[in-house]
Image (tube, rainbow, N blue to C red; front, top):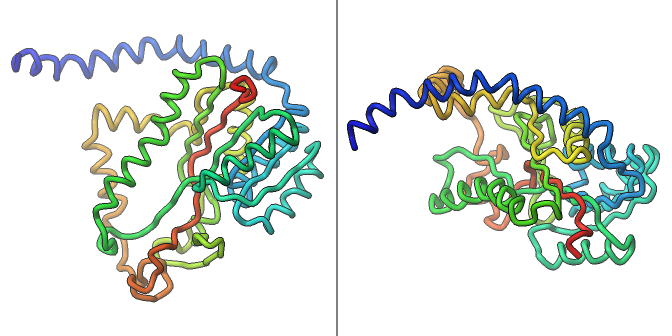
Length: 305
């Protein structure tokens, strides 16, 4: 068996790459045809009901504007209700038929049940549910006081995508699910702004965040909404990131060498955990950064009723 595995280790990777190269043109042509068909005969969003969580800033805010342009009925959900009022008015100006705002924290089950129930009671249904909220953290490994949390964080990060992958198989044609992932996006978090558990904003900077920028949030939001209306299973921005999946599987050492070169000349750090100059122990253990993450779009939810 060891001999067989040794032979397969040398044969399977190059053979798989050759098969992929031969099949790539056909797959590309099929995807282009399917995309064009769904673009012209996709879902008409006028008068549809769309719930967007994390709509007070960043990706969630821009997604609200894109749905507004399609003349939908919006429900904007976030903890910072004061931010939602201005977004509501802009969404109306862009074409939204009606806009409701609700203050809620998606980590609380009662809040989630409440804004879904109130939406159904008011509109009678939910067509699209857009989740743009997750939990984000930024710190250096040496600054962590409890390393037992690392397995939980890594499992949670993988579980979000795998959960929706599994859900696709279970709900099949009843509910469409679009998983959107992105690279470096220029949101508030890249400019050093976080939100604490109690809803207060906190601005901070560290040497590693100075001058940080990212890709266009507006462009990513357009791709998400367009993909969700077409029924695309995935939206990836930018698309060329996919090539690194091949390197990760077939040539992981190349990625490791690349990262080493990129981070070989990082300067010394000058600030502490959150860049406030305070010792780590002074940070409230109950406080967490702003919730941001990869959006998940679910369509045709009324079919589950």
